[in-house]
Image (cartoon, rainbow, N blue to C red; front, side, top):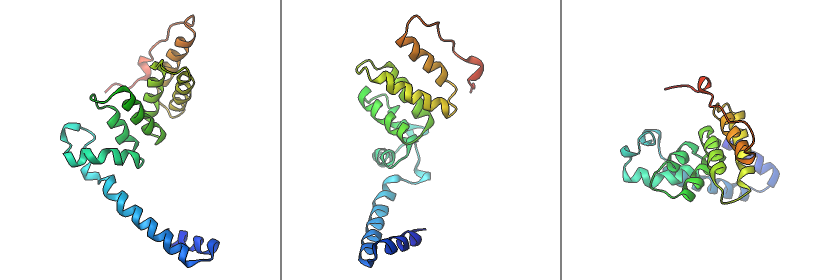
Length: 164
């Protein structure tokens, strides 16, 4: 796959020097990103108490490299501020992690610091609904009720929510 990409770059650029630069840049990125991303066996996100200090230090890098699950895990840390929670939840949602998408909608719905958050919350809750998050309908109802208090009360869809 990399060879095909380099061949295409050579065809478009006509210069082998550019290809060498691209390959060197790619190799440097991989050598930096892979250790930061961690390995599957090093995953401690199921239980924060099992994380070593080295794993904890690697979690933000993993989240920023596109691991939405890790970003959501970081958002769940009870020691962080509301602003940090919103930051990591946003990273999780932007990475396409479905629980992060729904949670971002809820955080924005409940945040009254910026009037634009209502529009943002509606967007993320609709995305969550389109991805099959069953609770998103209820969250959208609560959002609409917040905007228009005269609407009827929202009913929690107990039969739709899986119990564990």
